[in-house]
Picture 1: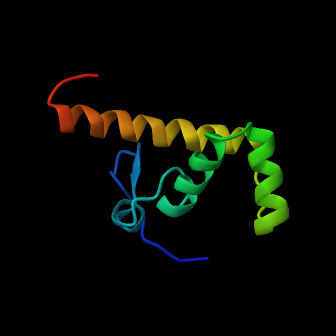
Picture 2: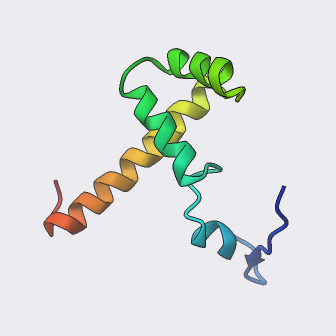
Amino acid sequence: MVLRHVYQRSGGGKTYCPLEREARIIMTSTPLFAKQVSSKLAYGSARDVQRDLAENHRRPVAVSYIQRVSEAVASIIEAKEESWNGSPA
């Protein structure tokens, strides 16, 4: 566990964590783990990815989390693709 500072406006609302922004955290995943999950999902189902992570990496992960991380990665790629092409895909 890593202790980190979180900032919020005095009126409440959304919080900001500089460490997570600078580390490029995707949901609660490191970029490497998000890439691994997305890559594995490209070749099989979310249940296959779940099984692989549990058996080969000793990392129990919920199917819903696998799906959400992959969706987040896809959104990031789509946004980057728009900036690379200069227009929406």
